[in-house]
Image (tube, rainbow, N blue to C red):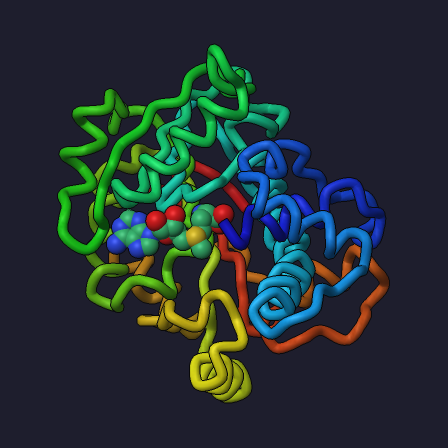
Length: 288
Ligand SMILES: C[S@@+](CC[C@H](N)C(=O)[O-])C[C@H]1O[C@@H](n2cnc3c(N)ncnc32)[C@H](O)[C@@H]1O
């Protein structure tokens, strides 16, 4: 919900050179969640510790979401070929807004509780028929990546492992243990026909970021204070894991590099420096 609020705040603003847009994000928010978005867009911080914490979390998140979304939209648009699987989809809006998905079938994989919440929001946003998708189709596969069999769930949802798939894994890796990340990579690699690609957003280790998160947990000064990061990856470590499964990293950028491309190189915060987006080719079919 926080990342959706961040995207709603940033929609239509020109600070990124016009590369970012997510008009659907605000439609997935409930009234109280939208109120914070309006406050941040207006630049009017509320009184009181809890309200101010929510305001600052959304404001900081909006800054992070712009380069993250831009990098991923570009990578997905460049590579998508008929099948897109969004792992840990949360309130991702791409199937409902990203031009270029008209001939792509999308599978949204998420923790059952998160997915149930999203489906209710989609119904409410587009009542009575639900929000119309841009993608050719959207199918939902409830999966807890810590315990469930991703392959079996995708089989049941009609995903074709013999056709190329673009895998999108945004904002999820830090919440999984290293073992869960390894198992997920193995499962998706096993369903990646030649020509498939993985677009993955992850967090690299950073002493400053670790200290910052420790402080926010201690102070309760962020709405994500109760969500610990479970695995951080150095670019070389992630590339090695992907290589074990026949995937070759062809691009891996810090979000600060992406942001610098949009606004002329403003100094980046810690989250922008340690957050990264990598693109890997599966099955040797694509070229960089
Ligand atoms: C920060 S949100 C990111 C959502 C979305 N990908 C985005 O970037 O907007 C984290 C997502 O990871 C999902 N997630 C966390 N742990 C998971 C697990 N064990 N199995 C499946 N999904 C999980 C949550 O349900 C949530 O949708």
